[in-house]
Image (tube, rainbow, N blue to C red; front, top):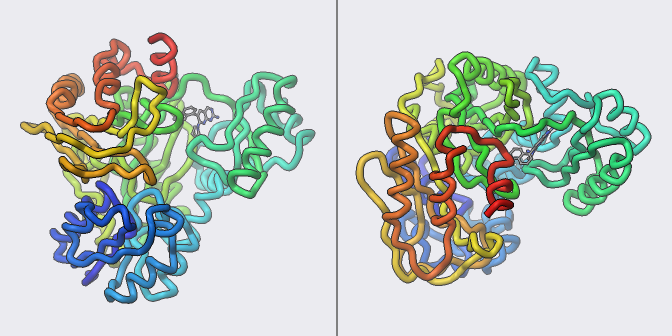
Length: 447
Ligand code: MV4
């Protein structure tokens, strides 16, 4: 097992990793920017090193400085958390070349799943259902239009280098196609420096359902069931839950087995997530694979009684998976993301000083957070303040528990998503589990 892990991240996930390391008896090194000097990940780690000024590009994204911190402190592994360098294949490669274990899959696996057209091809070859569409990238408008006619309108035009909804355009018909194609290409070139596009049939009113995977370095891969993450706004998830309200045991097995096949086809190891679109009539299609631990991992932890971060560290150290069969899911878990954003003003960021803070408690309540009274929320990073994760025997009990727990938060000094989350939890369509990726947009359009 590792002696010392450097955590190349900040905020709640850095604390989450520190806690896992303590239980595994591994020392921790926190890295931080100037403005994070008084952060809890700095205080709770065994050692800490300042790696630069506030902008991420000069601190949490600065590879040479992070490597220097690892060298100085004698760390033997690096945990990237989520965001920042977590899915940067060059970072993973440089870690390994510097003799540091990157806690995650191989650089090649990250690269392959990062190219969405390539990931799609890989999944087709592994027998994973993908959205009907093109087999490879589409070179120009003429070829694209011919391809779109074959697929049938409406179609979705996606950037190979994209993901998470960036560089994606729908085209309802032939007239719309050439313009959407041009816009998508420009967006892809500007945002990713790569204008490669591919096409899919547009899926109407899909749910976002993803499968959690764990793989070890000995070829074992297991799935831990699904999360429904349909409650999103502009591709930012707001509420996630497990199990998915529309997922039967048979569907879970089919989605899980397909995800395991896809991962095994590339010899995947580490924690990973296969994202699917689930249609209203129960068809599922591969969308993307995330090669990191995700923000919403706790809902899976609560319904499977596993510690995903500890497992992730164990398999990175070469240990074999202890779980070989998909665990039986127990009860229901719901996560609400509390962001420093103002829901009354288009969710604009609301950084500032936390004047007062009290977190809810009681049976089935977990709060993963790095904030405290007096903490200053910097404007430089993402706006996640806390995750409320509730568990209960049934979905309805978990929903009610989450609703009341949100009311117990005392959070003064910044605006937050708490009032909005409560409205969603009380919405009749959420109550009945009738959610899809258009839920939030429709709700906001009506209110
Ligand atoms: C789609 C789709 C409908 N049809 N692909 C958005 C994020 C990126 N991972 C893929 N996304 C979508 N791809 C086809 N062929 C609808 C979405 C989509 C979506 C997916 C998951 C969660 C929220 C979403 C919100 C809008 C659109």
